[in-house]
Image 1 (tube, rainbow, N blue to C red):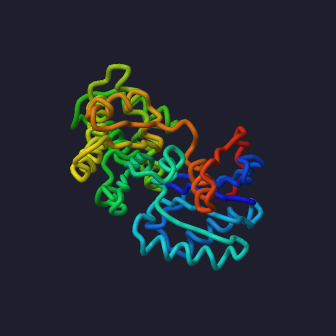
Image 2 (tube, helix red, strand yellow):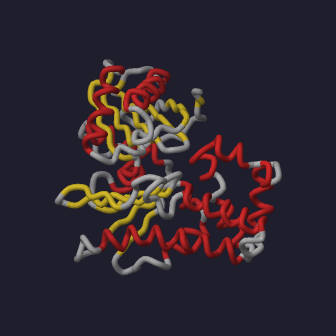
Image 3 (cartoon, rainbow, N blue to C red):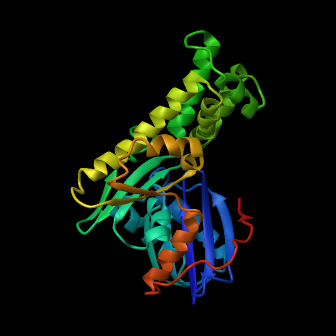
Length: 307
């Protein structure tokens, strides 16, 4: 019995193969795949290439993919992947927000809040799944790595020009770039959303060191993420809501604390999984096969990067 899990985000795509005992692991890493920002055929081709690298065959495959939050897009992507992966017996596709959540609480009800390159939340209840936020960088991705990175660069350039207050974000951004900000625009624009998201961690770093501008950016990030939870609570009038938080933004202990201060502790149980989301994707593949006791029981092997 073999299971494959896929965690595809805007920056990177991770694949993990496991047997039914949570052992005999194989792991691969691809560039980011966002189903809403590329043709479905292109996304399916990239993912199929990664699966083929793991051996191409599985009894169950679960793919949590950024941008695949609507049933129509998830269905179209699954159909294209099925054409390319005939040796996979059963396959499901959904938003990447569910990977960490399923790894933490299985298929129980709760809120999946993801803050990686993009941000989104999905509330799972007896009535189905409701998306909150996550309409992409052009419309709505408050609290995402991209929105924070953009704010960092905006503040740095404004300070450099004299249009805004001085901030250590200027030096931090130039250190990350390895070049002066005045020379960096071609590189930043060439890298696009993922490149800009890479500046997001600078907000927490500089805020912790006492920078007021960075602190304001970090606090705005926490407020935006907390709004996702507030919106979910309005639809769950009774009981305590489990909120599984994942994505690169939550790697910062400083931002986690800011976020926790803005959500009601009595109504929300926030969890920050230790295992990477791809482990949750594999666990979901096992749940598809009715195996409720599945857990990854070995250390993850190094990623084999596929360009």
